[in-house]
Image 1 (spheres, rainbow, N blue to C red):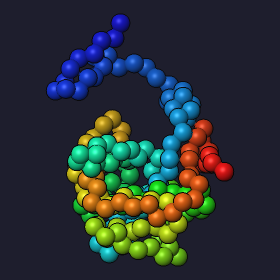
Image 2 (cartoon, helix red, strand yellow; image 1 turned 180 degrees about the vertical axis):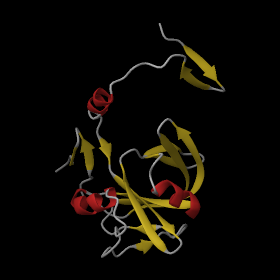
Image 3 (tube, helix red, strand yellow; image 1 turned 90 degrees about the horizontal axis):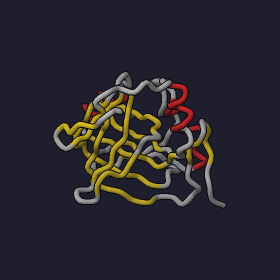
Image 4 (tube, rainbow, N blue to C red; image 1 turned 30 degrees about the vertical axis):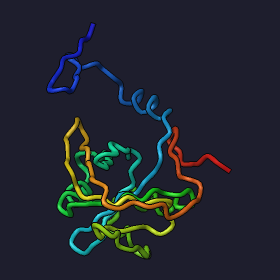
Amino acid sequence: MTGLRSLSRLWVMSEEPTIDPADYRSVLGQFPTGVTVVTSLDGDQPKGVAIGSFASISIDPPLVGFFLGTGSTSGPAIQEAGGFCVNVLALDQMELCGVMASRSDEKFVGVDWTPAPGTGAPILPGSNAVIDCTLDRVVELGDHILIVGRVVHLEVVGEADPMVFFKGQYGTFGS
């Protein structure tokens, strides 16, 4: 039997289970997630990455977070910028999501973004909500990093059906 041990209020497995990566993706694909684009500025250049691992962490203080693979080029840009803006996508932003999920250096060509009030990070047109954050901390966890932001501004800016990722596909629920 595998036991748990405490490591400074964090419980960790004392033995590593063997999990097939295909099974992992299949099972976790059963959990629907919202879709966001996290934006930041690299100097004066806008940067963005599609994220499905966004979460509310705390109301007091107001903290949110998301995960990036350790090999992502977006992580260092966000850390250097010292802040980011989470754009909660609407279903009709499927094309924008595809561009932001790509490795293209031209993600913002033709995108008429506005600067977020706190960080200046891009607010994308057509998003349902925006959450502007200063960088609070970065934690390395396995093959990902958790980026935590302290919310400095947030607002609902649209009311379209949300974009949802489920079983490897994008869709929505609602009307």
